[in-house]
Length: 155
Image (cartoon, rainbow, N blue to C red; front, side, top):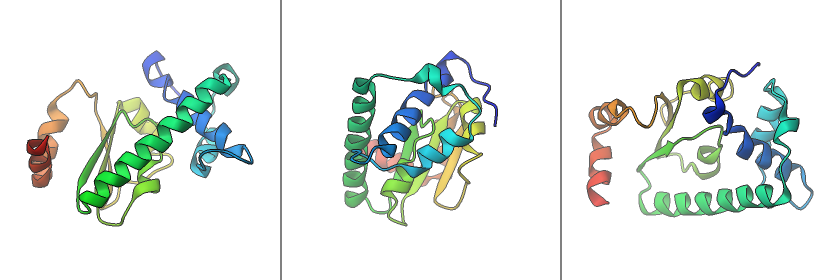
């Protein structure tokens, strides 16, 4: 699949490529086979994203930390609602899903178009094709997910 990304949305390929490279390592910090699949199927010149070991290490550490914190939230709120803002092509839902949470992936329309090539909307996981700066998505979720408002009140 050929990508049509602007400079902002193209940045999602950096962590994707880093996760793919880390997964390919024998002693990789993370295992994300879906990242390898996506890199293999996206028609993009990833050679220009060859990054330093520091970037790959940073992405891997960030992935581990965010997965751990998300799992902690889900353990405390097993029927909770999670919104992955600026989700890019992350696979966090697959890593943390407890079978009960409701998960929303929010990103720019061109990002969600690519995401739909690899992920499906279902009862638990849904994609929102909006800019974070367009507040209408918040109101749509408040109407759709009455629990969403309750979680906002807690913070």
